[in-house]
Image 1: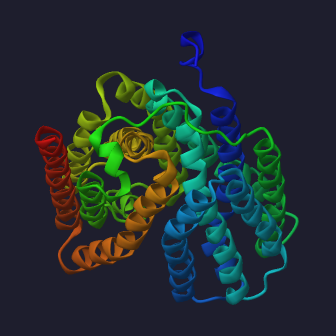
Image 2 (image 1 turned 45 degrees about the vertical axis):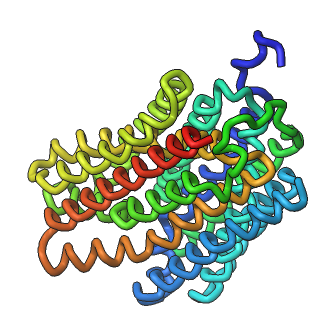
Length: 399
């Protein structure tokens, strides 16, 4: 790769960024409205937990399976196309859904699609760019994803407001879901510009040689497991905001603030990780998360929520894209989709007990204790990550 070309994001990163933007725009037109949709159909709230629990658990478990298949077959694009295609094809069925089981089936198909595409997509991005800009590339991709997350709810709100005076709420929701099909299929158009590639770099470090079976990688997974136990559903952040006086009408605006900061910080902090290294930023992200959660615990004024939601968006920039770039640093290319699948499986599996635990502690004690508990798990994740770094250092030293 010529020196003048190595700092360019390239065709794959940009096209896959556009795919994520339009896919997330489509999904965020639908996902926030599912509780209202079920309620309008007369489905009890308890069924929402069943639907989301089954859908998300399936996605978490299957990501490793699809990641391993992608590595074995040495194919990325077919899994990306299948995954995004399955999600797009499932979307129109919301228009005719008449029972909670139909909604479960649609959500199940959508999450299987996400499980199929994510490991292969991240592996393809990691192989498509020069090693010196991994953080920048993943930061850009996560920013594009977040732009979709901002535009989706705004577009859905616009459509619902335009339809609210002429038809019933249920019919308006169905039409909104049907319109969400358009950006989903636009996303599929951009997949055609992505190309299968093999990394031009060779693996030289001792960590790379052992890769997915290495102690540092396994400890990184364990660190994320502990951390995820404290990283419960973001719904609790909204619940905290309402507890201190943020009205329901301002919740979407609060979420837009969070996503906007995510969008801005992801490429900036991703590029910073290319310059100073991934390790200090990952270590700092655990500490930063714990600090933010402690502040959430102490927060008692509405203005604090606006500041903390913006600050929480910076955590996203510190973690999501940088973690993906770090996986590309320590795992050999032929096992990289499996590694991404394993990381996402670990996070998904531990997210459910994390939310349950958060809810139990919140109910039995109060929100402050619950957030302090989350901060504590963040510190445990940080300490485990430090052990992984020391282990990697000792392995290199012994060789």
